Image (tube, rainbow, N blue to C red; front, top):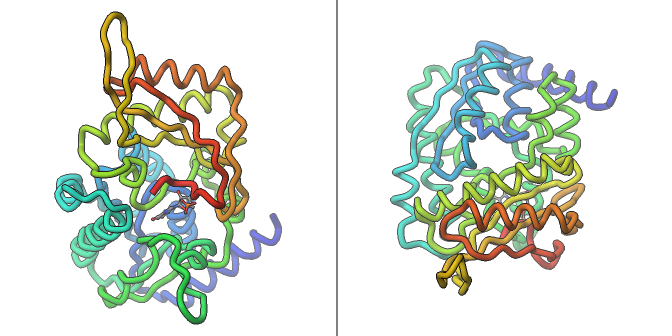
Length: 319
Ligand code: XMP
């Protein structure tokens, strides 16, 4: 890790000389990337840092509370929480096409972020946790026709609109390097080893139209998946594990009654760089426990499937 120690020191010095005594705004999602950016900035410029957390209503179970707790424990800086669930639900109403969902979420995010950012006085810079794979997948560093695989809403757009200068200190790093950097900067393992979570959140795991009711179901199922994998001691063996709510109903039987409920897919992958991935060979007993618990505990679900597709050709997310 000596190389990352050097990297951190160089990045800190670079940030200091770039920023001077201006204020820097950092979007915080609770994920590894934005936390590492915040930690790096905090080390570099301390009280000149303001963070903004947009709660888009698409976060995982108890996530907002956890982020605030973890955050306030590690950084004594200016934190702005924007409660924006209603706004996101409104803009997603009736929309089921994946790219359109992403576009709308990205747009709403920018609006919310902007409204909060303009309240922060003397801000001149905006820090983002863009990683190398984001840069590649968005086509930002490609010549000729950009190979946009998916729209990553955390790349581009925002800083120009706000007249901010962009700081992307993780732009050259892969995920595993970001994690090691986080540890180097003193972030706790529980945060550093959290599985990545996409910007558009549960919306891309709630296939088709997103509604509050569906999100509630998905949140419960997802929390069971993650907790059971953790309990089995396999969380860190997998790179990303979550539930996907399918827009498919199937017939089942509960007690004496026929059911016609939704299906949930379990997605768990192992990857080094998130550009290719293999599905996790989770033990059957673990899959059985997850399935039984979801079907028994989550109303509206009567079937659980396991996704055994690798990337490529499938992507990690279903949308
Ligand atoms: P895919 O589904 O493309 O995902 O194999 C690769 C990695 O990127 C995450 N992901 C996103 N992250 N905004 C993000 O910030 C997005 O729109 C987005 N789409 C996918 C995904 O969770 C996985 O880690």
